[in-house]
Amino acid sequence: MFTGIITDIGQVRAITDTNRDRRFEITTAYDLATIDIGASIAHSGCCLTVVEKGDDWFAVEVSAESLSLTTLSQWGIGTRINLERATKLGDELGGHIVSGHVDGLGEILSVKLEGGSHRLEVRAPRPLHRYIAQKGSIAMEGVSLTVNAVHDDVFGVNIIPHTWDVTTLGQIVAGSRVNLEIDMLARYAARWQETA
Image 1: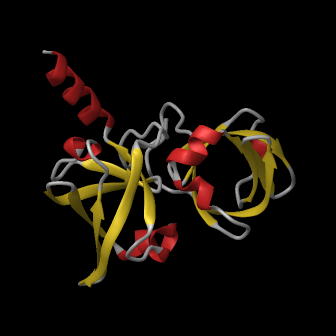
Image 2: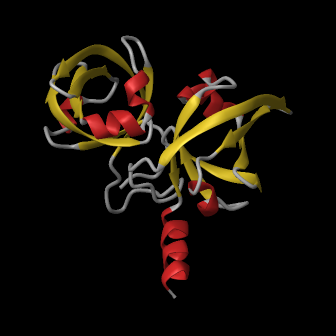
């Protein structure tokens, strides 16, 4: 489990295709002595397992299914990635509960400066849009955000300057595709309503 609070920006340093899967090596500022092989780390919202590590890098393997359903298939050498280590019991829950399971890809429709913040309008894939509510939470590229407005399948979020600067959201432009994970509570509430 994660919180959607990004703790490092990693960078892809190597990519290897293995049959239908893909292996990425990611450089990081994390103290790798504190990360075990088999540890879970969220990569721009995708929970991936550490399979090897060096002095300043670690490797993850990604299945063909994950590549087809997330932005990971677009990663190249030098791609910057939002990283978050798994939450430990007793850690501060600064964002919201995030599983690291991407539900779908959103499309950035616009990026506008609004005061000191940036307002993003995002189109959510159907039927995922039904789970997005005004003042609810959503994880976008692994970042915990509050939904400001919803109209049909388009929702808006405001990115404060700090978040814009310390995550990869600052490089998003209109037309970008982003990993989305809906709020876990919304998922279960909707499922309960469907079966009640």
